[in-house]
Image (cartoon, rainbow, N blue to C red; front, top):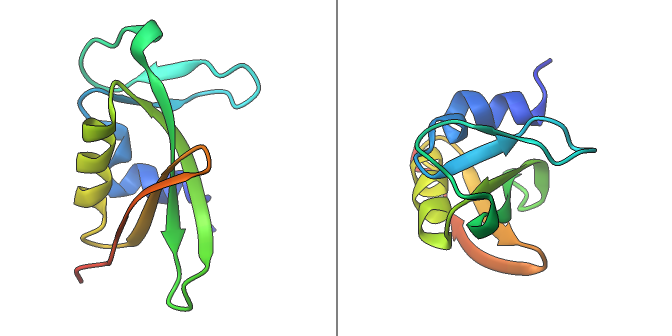
Length: 99
């Protein structure tokens, strides 16, 4: 059984320009996946996989340079998965699976 993080990584979040996935949840250290990121300008986001019943079935936290970069990556992954993008307690956008 793959973890939620592995599911989202394989779906494409790990290849985001301007985004990174945390390597260690305890330390908050991040793996920069593409491009150059400035630590001071990074913001944390959460992408939730949404099941057919509308409930979250998994999630992954990641950081991006801005909301636009986070939305673009989540939108691309939503071709295969229904996903909600959140920043802290603020829901930014929800995408329905396209397939």
